[in-house]
Length: 631
Ligand code: PRX
Image (cartoon, rainbow, N blue to C red; front, side, top):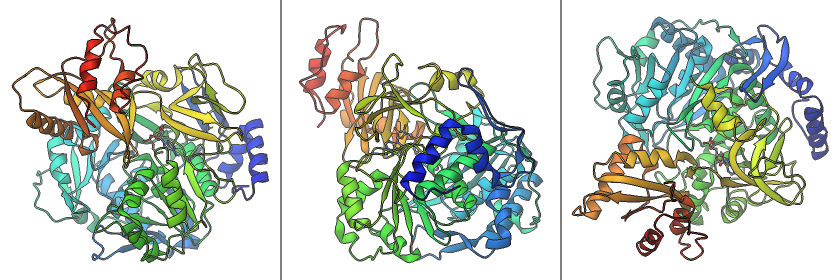
């Protein structure tokens, strides 16, 4: 059985998945098209780590996303594409058209020397060509590394270098709200440091003037003209790499999370079917950017695997006004809508007058992802968008998990505001204390781990399996550690409380404090900085930076502007601190460790209960910091 239809069935499926995981997942995998069936369902150890699903199986995920549907769905819409500007023409792509475009672009890649195993970087706005590029990589067996279009040239070049990409696919520019983003220019700057890149394919989206480097840069449209629509899919091993997606951790540079072909396909599809309870013919819309995992799993792969019809939106929720999401829902009669708490809060703040003109009566299910959803936002979503009629699925997962792990099944699991509720079948969450002892029973709180692999679990971090081990499998032996804190209430429902490491969640974007600090430290006048997250009404968390400046004469406003520019240049505008406080020292222990706990409290405005500060080298810095705190 693929789709669960009642809570009793959920419990019995869950039990089966724990009693015999291999049989459970083999059944789910059976329905796909495999060029060769697997020899063994699962081989794993969390120690190295080495995790293999559907060992020996051969497949190509795009045959399952596209070719398999053609006999029955050739003329069904795969994607409605809605442009940033509501007055520009929208585009529809049927499964047949998408298939043909993907095959053609696969041939373009091959004509430009791309082959199985190559790493191809995709740096694009939310246009149909982005999906086509992703699928074309998968079709020829190249490993895609999509980099979110908001990252800077420095970030982009770091990601290209880390996995040695030989091709970059981009566009001249991109539209986001009232802004034009000069994407090709960013690529040009990034590539000054990336000798591995031999070809750059450019889609013309904004028609802004760009420089094309002869021999390296080619236009998408020219290349597509003569490309054949015939492109047999490369035969992939179930454990061949499908993609790399960079994400921030608590230390060092962003790491390349690797997902593989077989397990990722099986799990993303299974979770999509069950969480969203997608019915044939429905219209589904996930508002994420394809540059993040939500877009990979629940805009590109899972909906296509399910033969669904989806909306892809190029723009932002507030352009040309805060009614845009609701207008799009009515325009396409969206049945299932999946967005982030930060967007809900921003639209709530804009006021219900932006919602009132729209019917929203096509909506059946609402989803939330990316950060804890606060009760007020949950209630607003439920009342004004769902009209008390649509179950809200608060889906908890991560780049590393590939798919949703803890979530209500829409209309089946009784929901509770702020709770991701119950694990999906196959997922065995455990809460542990600091020492790694399992905290059993209900009404408890601890660090969230998972004790058994599921098919789309992270396989490695690109080029560095030891780092993967240290990050996820070393904190607690034999457990995958999520980095999240979590409560389990008396009903056994899970509530994610947020990160317990030095990772911030800014508007649903994951940013490491260390990354922002090292960007700030690039400023010539800054000797040291410490960055923490603090509660922010719209973004969930905001970034608070404490900086030590050597130049005492420096104009403070000027310094702030320069720091923001430095962070934008090194990471991207999403990582700009909201508050910058200049301090003469940081609270450090005698061994030189910054006590972030204190900085976090001060940033939250909690100036009194700072806890024990007796171990500080110089407790007087705390007094100074408290006096200068930015409200
Ligand atoms: O802290 C959790 C938070 O987002 C982190 C994962 O971020 P990322 O890899 O960028 O993936 C985001 C989209 C899946 C988690 O460690 N998070 C994600 N979803 C939720 C959440 N926190 C609370 N509730 C959620 N539903």
